Length: 305
Image (cartoon, rainbow, N blue to C red):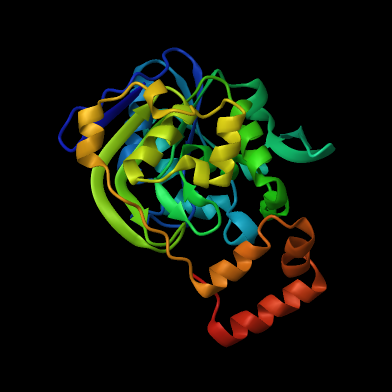
């Protein structure tokens, strides 16, 4: 079931009670950015409601991809530690926490990826707090994609070749996973870091991650079958194949929906060409050749923010 809270409407989603709950915001930049990161206000509202319902709450995040910044910097920039101390919640830097291994089968081969032991052994429920955005590599970044940041490996781009299978398995391993989408801002035209932030002032609560992404695609005018990881999740039964299988307010969706646009830059189009190739990814990012190429490129055009 989907429930959408619009501006001025009391925030009262059906969240767990009396359980150990992990909360995953999207802190994909060291400081708050409209349409890019979960707003401190919505994160606080979610954690406050969970604490009020007698839950033991863990706010979790990991280092930025490709070593762009460490998790502690993002936690500081978003005031997460101060918020959790005030509310009685616990912050967990997944990049510094004990790890287990997930073994994923893909095309007849086995792939091992690191995964936080906390999320396998010490929680009863999980709440994803993503920001809805277009994404230059994956098409969209919604509730499912937010959990890619649970992988405690700054070089998780090494798993991009198996992105569809890995992100699905990560989501499947989470107990009683739901979503509270921070729709204060949506990101359009480009993403996940830069684009046009659209002010919507929505909070969208979903009973499951799969239903959430199916609904958000409809809200944004996106065909989920055209998004590879969502198409795979539909085939595997994780995301509903039909919007009619999701309970929601149809009139509200009609009124709020819009047509998202994604315009990739030439550099993004080039990088996307080898997004699913492990060999090319390693060549361009982890080999001596790739490191030298990046140094030369950044010397000419400047390092991206």
